Image (tube, one colour):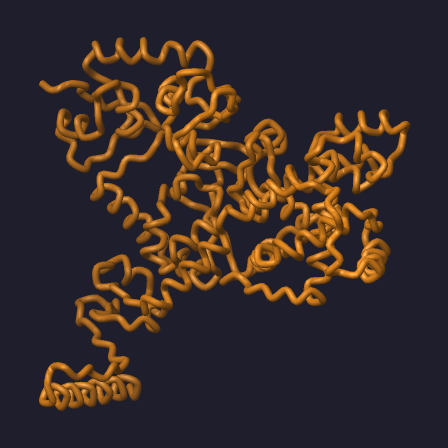
Amino acid sequence: MGRYIILSLVFLFGISLQAQEEEKGKQVEKANFRVQIFQKVDSNEIILAHPDPEFKNKLPISAVIRDSSAVSLEDLPRAAKIDSVWKAQLTNSDLFDEMYKSIREQDYEDEVNKELPTDTLKARLAKLNARTPFNVEYHPVLESVINSYLKRNKKAMERLMALSEYYFPMFEQQLDRYDIPLEIKYLAIVESALNPRAKSWVGATGLWQFMYRTGKAHGLDVSSYVDDRMDPQMSTEAAAKYLANLYKSFEDWDLVLASYNSGPGNVSKAIRRSGGSNNYWELRRFLPRETAGYVPAFLATLYLFEYADEHNFQPQGPDIAFFETDTIKVKKLITFDQISKVTGVEKEMLQFLNPSYKLDVIPFVEDENYMLRLPATVSGAFVSNEAAIYNFAEEDIKNKAAAFPEFVKADEQIRYRVKSGDYLGKIAERYGVGVSSIKRWNNLRGNNLRIGQYITIYPRKLGTEAQNTSTASSQNNKEKTYTVKKGDSLWSISRKFPGVTVQNLRAWNDMGNNSLKPGMELKLSKG
């Protein structure tokens, strides 16, 4: 009771001050007191008419859902901009491009930069060698790579160290399960610069850069909505299993690293060409150029992280730690925008925590377990209000007439070689996919293609089915009606019939916001 008396007194005091200020003129800024005006409603639910930002997280999620228009929180523009820029830096893909380029193109025979004394480096490498299963011996090439990282990549390395505070605890947990050296966690930096959506020029994807077939063999599926190779936890477990199998073959962790990059076949060929040596530095000249730079990049990264304090690295950590998050099994289709609205978690944070959802949409499919990762501070509230949240999401989709792609699992991928006269639209039409999808699968920033360039495509139809798509569509058009099947959406139906849009289907069938049901007959033309 005393709490409400205090609020009332603060409110009255605020009114009194406001009156005094109005007498002085409208030019004077009013005092900003934390006054909460509670709107009287018939139910026991409390709704704030003008919520204070610091009180927002204390509201039940149901209040936000019931009157989301009342939640209009303003932030200081300068502070918001700083947060936005920092998050963009923390999660951008430039680090991957830079790391990938340095491994493929760096000239490792450059003269060694002597900013780090060689004797000091030798002593530190000897200590690392004594406590790791890797062959961390001094080599001029390794010294060159370490110095190049110190000279040119210090800021980038600090950003990677910041990201590692989120990912490494999860990596170590999975690696320990499969009895793999914990130092292997640094491999993800070399592979992807800790960018779960990283994609190489040959189509390798995710933190651990799985090719489609290798990922599929280790339980990582790809669909129109989800790419499991981008899921940090699933891909890390798959990588741990794969590395454990490689070690059974080579029984040497340096060679495991080399084979992870270039394939076991190339490493076995290098062993033969070297006369049977198992020492990486002796095999190095017989390995592909990229692999020749790969292991030194790993060892240089291992050194820099282990001796970060000695080199005065000062990373700023991410907003959240991995163990401060929790997962929830999704029971209905829901978008990141909707989740952000009801939980208050920024969309950028949702994308960071849930990178495997390619369209910022979490689908619901029978017999599939799609998980939403949230900060632990809001996961409990989400679970407590699940029914209301899913009702809100469903109504929101109806009101906005949102159309979502058909859920299609990619059972195969095509590595397509660009020919003269090709352009993205032409290729997309040929395989029944969107231009934006091709760009996303291949990390393309523009629409330009080079003749001879290889691009990865996950076609909706394969073989003769793809060739017969246009024929089937024309036949269905003549039938003038379409019978709705399970899993259909207006968007997926419109894609089957050239010239037919979602708006056409709604108008011709007088649908309004009504949802589709299997067995419904839809008109495919006016009249």
